[in-house]
Length: 76
Image (cartoon, rainbow, N blue to C red; front, top):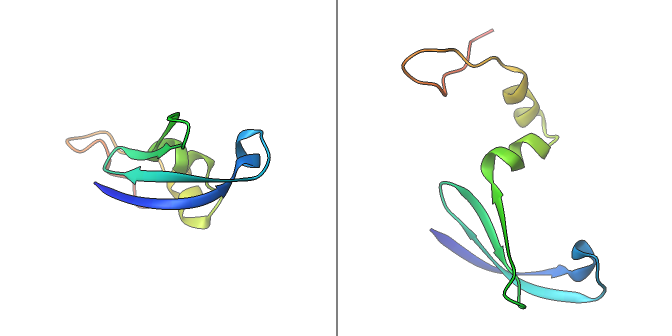
């Protein structure tokens, strides 16, 4: 598990001004711990689904092959 302190804008959460937060990430995803104690969990799958980069788009469009390893993808 890794941790990083970040500064973001509170506008990202509907307020105004700048706010500090802590981001923790592990195999399951990212958790942002806000100064008010609120936690936001973002699973890797949700991040990949929302990402518009070429690599993530390609992974979403490549069919998954059923078999021993459910994460295997078909080579097209």
